[in-house]
Image 1 (cartoon, rainbow, N blue to C red):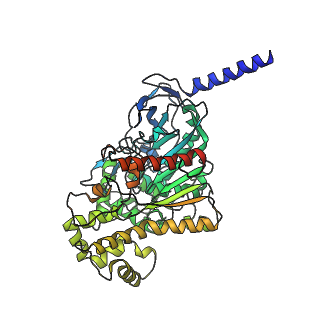
Image 2 (cartoon, rainbow, N blue to C red):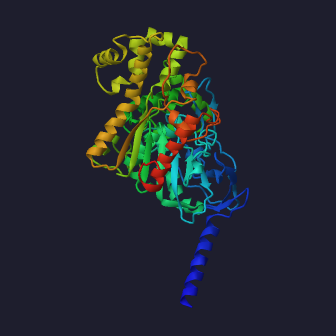
Image 3 (cartoon, rainbow, N blue to C red):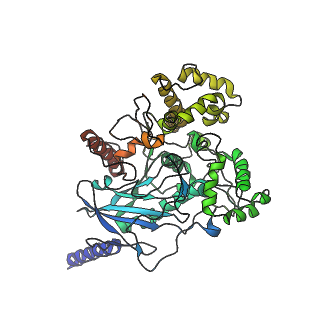
Amino acid sequence: MKSDVRIFLTCLHICCVFTTVLTYAPKHPIVKTNYGPVIGLTQTSRYGRDFMSFRGIPYAKPPVGELRFKAPEPPEPWSFAVNATQDAPYCIQKNYFFANPKVEGKEDCLYLNVYVPQTIRQNLLPVMVFIHWGGFFAGRGSSDIIGPEYIMDKDVILVSFNYRLGVFGFFTTLDDFAPGNFGLKDQVLALKFVQENIESFGGDKNRVTIFGQSAGGGSVSLHLISPSSRGLFQQAISQSGVALNLWAKPLNILQPNVTAALASFVGCADHLGNSSGLVQCLRKVDAFDLTESGDKFKYFSIEPLTPYSIVTEQKTDANPNPFLTKEPLEYLQNGEFQKVPWIVGNVQDEGILRVAQLVRQPEVLKTLNDNFNIFLPQMLALQLSVVNTTDLFKNLTNFYLGGNTFIDINNTTSVQGFINLYSDRSFTYGTFQSVILQSQKLHRPIWLYNFNYKGQYTYGDPFAATTNKINFTWGVSHCDDLLYLFKTPALFPELQEETDLQMSEDLLTLWTNFAIYGESRKE
């Protein structure tokens, strides 16, 4: 009799779990989250496996009105089912990486997507949370860029999301009125949403792997450091980005000038010196105008990509959960970071990200070469490394460009040297520095990789923002590894070449096995 009762209670428990986890229907599954129900869609993976797609789930209140320039707040519960069958608006931005950028997106953008493969397993699945790229001023977690179809052939749940960008995500007054790092705090809240709700989708909150590329990779590295992110994940993958990269460096010293310039651009200069009044004025400025004001910071081409930066914050009663209170380097030197299993690396030619646009547009190249000694030190931000940049610039041009102070597109060595200079300055050096420091502080295990596979498609083409060609054989561009992890219909056709498909399978296996088993292995 006791065994019958035990069996009955076990069956009752399983039935209750699956009732609250999801109600499966052929086309429109329903999941009950802690905030309310969401209705999804059944889709098909690359190789024909059904998976459930829930797109556009709010993980925060809309960051508009009085919530602009504030830390995100959890969403209000909803009683009616949220229609999660299509992508929600992505965060307002102007993507200077691509040709003819326009202001696009919405300020109300804090939504996430959950993709669940249909399996015969009854155990909770490991979870992979992807943080998108875009230099902290562009990008999105939408399915047209971060398509789930490839990963859904594996036994993991995928989560992607949007976070605030540019002025909305990183404007700061360096005090309690706008402490900054809002985009990173959005990420923390998204990770908390996963912890609180992923079991309802059949996911294991104790087996969460965060992974990201470029700004997303840097974000992953920053989450290893930030006290706000403790306990929100168990493993991490940083692709082409770490906290010690130049573009992820807190730049408190520059932000007062950025704030003053922004205020003058949008009619709030009268409030300079009064953070409360300034922030209130900026909250009244149309989101389009704030985004468009980014153009006024440019001194050449699309430089700087964004004037807004990560900053260190003060912990106060009004700002109880700062993302960083000191420099990432200091956290690492003190061993103050999560020592979880970590995969980190770069692609072979990261610098194509900028070099393609600079050398394939004749007018841009001419302007650069005519002002080489002025523009390039600024573009490489040499002043952040040394007080007197003259000797450093000379050493760099000697090493990478054969002593020339111009780029010769008819000389492959010149173009490749320029790519290598950008790669090392913006990406590779920071990766090696991070791995060395974290290894010295007994961070185990760490896997360091270099991705050098060149396939049929490349992000170097859209990054060039032109159809002009030069006589140069391009290598493996920044972002090219993403081609083998995600379907990207907004930019590229589906993979077709047999070798590309094999690379996709290999990379997916390495990444998802890491999420499943806690180690990078191919089997």
